[in-house]
Every structure is written in structure tokens, then in C-alpha cells.
Image 1 (cartoon, helix red, strand yellow):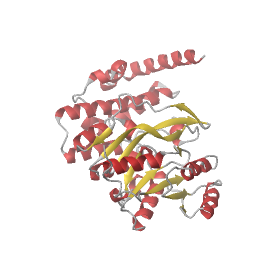
Image 2 (cartoon, helix red, strand yellow):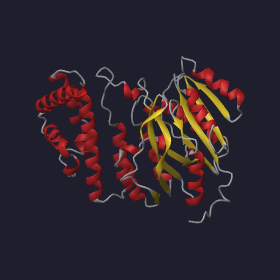
Image 3 (cartoon, helix red, strand yellow):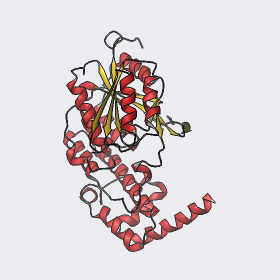
Image 4 (cartoon, one colour):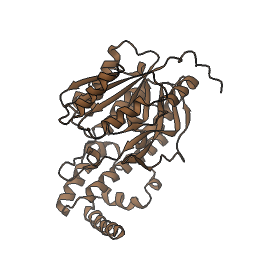
Length: 355
């Protein structure tokens, strides 16, 4: 296709939004990955969210060397608040036209051609958002490459189809897979959600999905996700685990309000919701808990408003569950002790396999 939008987006600028918290061992690689980009028209915003290690000092060190780097220090409020601060900075800069925001976590890195690739896509399709793949990295080496088989690729302009894609596949939740037109950014107050440790990316994505008209799904990887053993997602235990369906409920409320899903769309979406619940059950079963303790966790899910009002006894596609269908059947019937027994057996098999 001929690049009809080259002139319009010739001087496209990127804002790189990076929340920073206690990542002194990672932040240099993160910043350097931006500085090495083949496309150099960018401004990096580092929001030091109350780090107690040397992360803030390292950020200041880079800021003194490069005027394209801005460091903002704030008390520790969490990643959601740090991103909110960065978005406010962009909106106050009066440079939202011909500008795109790229979200980058401080223990991750961008591929060297990430911004150039996004630029070319925007020039070609004039899209509001670009969604791309990510590789999983450990100790600087790729341990799992992005698999684009059976993944969506190309330009999506139909809002109903977009919602089907992004709300029925958790792989698209991460903001770090998205480059978003700064025109879509808004000063939404997320203070009531600062306590959440998971799904905050999905929460922020809702308004962007609603506002955008064109989304391009790029079938390659532009991002390196670092498997950090000290991150929140890697340190879930029975001591800090709790079920919170606040964001999932907001998604359902949002889809209902948009009123564009067909009955079949809802069946597909509820099937996705059940898979999410089964993932929660899997996490609970991974803990070394008694039957009574496990039952308490299961009841938190079963009696939740999210499950009772939106999923329980409603139609879904059982074929997507595969071998997990038996787990869901027992859960729906509240036959928890059988899930508990199956879970213990599964853990034993896994341990033998590791040996």
C-alpha cells in the first residue's frame, strides 16, 4: 500500500512513559534501550514512584546527560499512579497532536527498531493505536519468543470486533504492548484503584479502546518482557493473595453500556471469564493449604457479585475449557473437596515430572 500519510506524520514524536520503583538492577538497560532506538524523536518520562534504592539517582544521572529525559519524583503510590502522573505531564505539555505514547515498564526493554516500526505503521494506516507482541527475557536472553500463530494481525476499524479481540484474550491487557495516540489520553482519576496489584493495565485500556477508531495489530515483537523474580506477579503467595473482580466487573458494565455484543459474543466472553476463574482456582491450588482454607478462597469467588450476577448458570462454550471442564463443573456445584483432591494429585505429578 502507498504511504499516503507520510507527510502528516513526518515529525511524529513519541513519549515513553516509564514508572520506576526499586529497579536499580534493571533501569539502565531500560533507559538505554530507548536511547538506542533507530528513530530518535522521543521524550522519555521517568516517574520515580518512591524508590528506596538507587533507581531515582540513576534516572537523574541520565536526565543530566540528555534533555529528552524528564524525571518526576513522587511518593510511593503504585504503578497505576505513576502512569497517571506521566499522562498528566504529556497533556500539560500541549504536544498531543502528532504524538504517541509508548508504555514501558522499568525492568523491561524496547527492541531497537520499535519506534521506527510503529512510526511506519502509523504513517501507512493513520491508526490511533498499535498493538504489538513481546518476547519473554531472562538475564538478557530471550527465553520465549512471541508466537504470532493464530494471532490477529492487520487493521481493525470495527468496534465490536475490537472488543471481541481485546476483551476475550488476556494477552492484550498489557499497556506495554500498546502505542497510543496522545489525543486519546485523558486525565482520569484512578485513585480508587491504586490498591489493585493486577489488571490495572486493563482498567486504563478501557477508555483508549472506546476512543480509538483504528487499531493496528502488528504480528511481530517490539518489546522485551523481563521475567523478574521479585516482581509482584512472580511473588504471589497465600499470604498476599486475594480475589478482586473490580476490574472484570467494570469490563462487563462497559460492554453492556456499549450495547454492541450479540448473544453469541456474550457466550464467548463468558467462556473467557470462566477461564479466568479457573486460573484463579489454579493459583489457590498451588498453595499448601488445608481443605478448609481452600474452601474459604473458593467461596470468595463463588459468592462474589461478579460470578453470581454475570457467570453462574449462564450459557458459555464448554468446549474451550477442554480438560478443565471437570474442575469448573465441580466448582459450579460447590463440590470443593473433589477439586482439592484433584489439585493435590496434579501437584504430585508435577513434582515427579520436575525430578
